[in-house]
Image 1 (cartoon, helix red, strand yellow):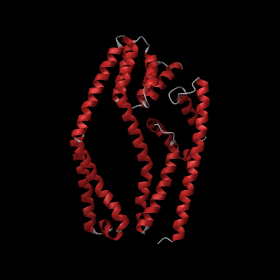
Image 2 (cartoon, one colour; image 1 turned 30 degrees about the vertical axis):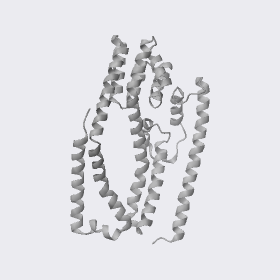
Image 3 (tube, rainbow, N blue to C red; image 1 turned 180 degrees about the horizontal axis):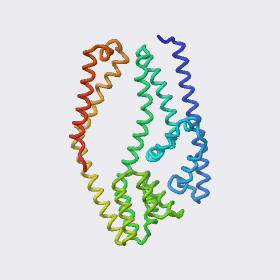
Image 4 (cartoon, helix red, strand yellow; image 1 turned 180 degrees about the vertical axis):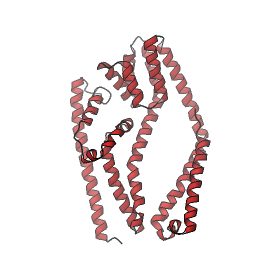
Length: 322
């Protein structure tokens, strides 16, 4: 159905487009690195990056940066900037949208070539369109999980700094200097915000909005209450850190006990769809009976209903709140 000349030409187009995109991203990254160097000189830091006031200035530069065509026609994508910030990626929403559209075109073409029919192209297009967003979701999930894992240590480190006679702001600065990312970046941003004149309560409130973590909200609330009513903040932070650490210990035991059920659920849910995509690209004439024959349509609807019911049941079994 597709000539070899057309396949080679399209493949060359995809390769060249990808190379041009990589070169453009590399140039933009180098320009951003030079800008960060200038920001480091302005704030008086030459060695440590992404943990001081240059994060605020860099974000402002990204916001006022020259808008692309995608940004002009898709202004609603700017509302997802907080999601991108939580994932700690430098890619703008419009850029990721363009990458997903390019991946959708490539996936659709590959599906059409493998199945020798254009009717299969939407399947590959949907898979290609979803891959960049799945990557973004995974980056955000991993970063938030690492933050939650580091939070008890950060609370205990802040409490030790308070007992040593340091202020709360100095304790946050110790966390930013001594602990690894991502918690060092977030606490360093709070420290720099209060250095710029923003009240500490407001800086902590912004931190709780940037990082959707319940334990962090407890920490911010405890700090705000202590600054208004007084009390031993170090002891409060020790108790919160102990509770959070014990809760994650129990959560780890629950995950270990339910690991087999969760893995079985993932396999049972994804295996039918994976086999459907495989058969769609290898035996299209065989699989098309699922939507052309009356009995096949009824079987497909029944299978989807049973899949959804099974997924709900498995989630209820393995999802234990701690």
